Image (cartoon, rainbow, N blue to C red):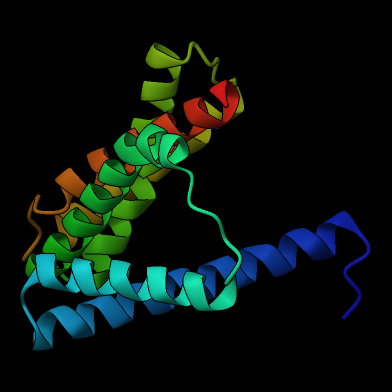
Length: 169
């Protein structure tokens, strides 16, 4: 498969991202069912990430000031991951996916109010379509609850903070 044109690159990246995301959700759901201690799972995941980074990049340098600057973002990331694991403890994977898909709505609102980013009319239309789909799902799910809403909020905050970080640094 040639990845020379933008469409192929976008299709490849979107497919890979979707498969990775779905795999991670299903894996986390399975882990949480077997080992229901979300904080411990989060700690193990972070430890494995650090070990894999150290093994893959042995010359990676630690800069104390950069680490200090990234502490708020890392805390938001951990909050995001922890809320994801907690949500998966209480809701089904389809419900979790619906919640994740509503995250751009909250992020767009935060972007508008915090970063003064203007949202195009077409984007607003698509965000309404997402919201409408979430309401249809919720009205037809007998076991629907709002345990995943904290994950949507933490994911949105993380998204906006990281965008601000890249703009500022």
